Image (cartoon, rainbow, N blue to C red):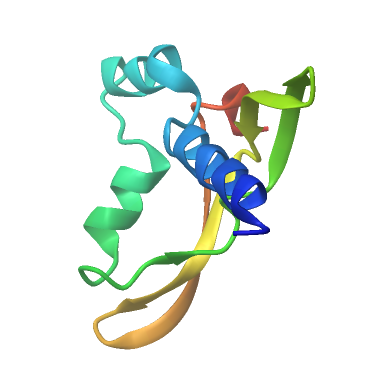
Length: 100
């Protein structure tokens, strides 16, 4: 497929974004008795309705034209349903740069 390399890179970025601020950031949230933003959204939104819009926003680092690191934007934004009503959710990801 002509675009397979680009599709593979997008999928790698999505995988990296799912890790949020990495294990140290996630552990810090949990150690402070807090949920991560994705955990909060999962608990708040109707099951299976969250559609993230911001997952690919962030900064990338390349070595020899290969993606080696991706730090996502410290917000998780997407559409969802709450009690059946369509809503837009925007939450700060405090595992990435303190959410600032």
